[in-house]
Image (tube, rainbow, N blue to C red):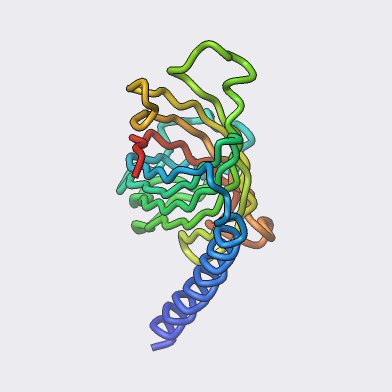
Length: 202
């Protein structure tokens, strides 16, 4: 009975934070709604989570979570190269996997809901290369493994355009997520997440 009450409380706290993040996104989009030079994109693909508590996103790649590696996002891009993105990712840590050196005795689902501001700066590096672009992003997220936590996120990626109109592309990105109160957060700690996605104009 106590276990069920605890689960309900966790779900309630997660939904409360999810609503706050959604409200923040809606407010941001409304603020910039008057901009004429903008375009909507969506992306869908795969993600992998490294939750070893290390500073390197490439450490021990065999311990990354790839159980349910689904990721999707919606992005609003302005002509200035600035955009805002809302993403949802799902994954799973399997029994006998390791998180921060802790051997798991059961499966754990991973769910994250992230809001990022992004800047595309590829034109400043390769001004004549229309088929490739680079970007950096930063923002905040809500994620859950054993409990629920908030993270400050920073990362970047590369986007390969598949057509001249730049309406279809493939992107690869890595995001570092720094959990709030990470010393007391248990399994819901600092981690890296890598994405491989198809991106297309809406």
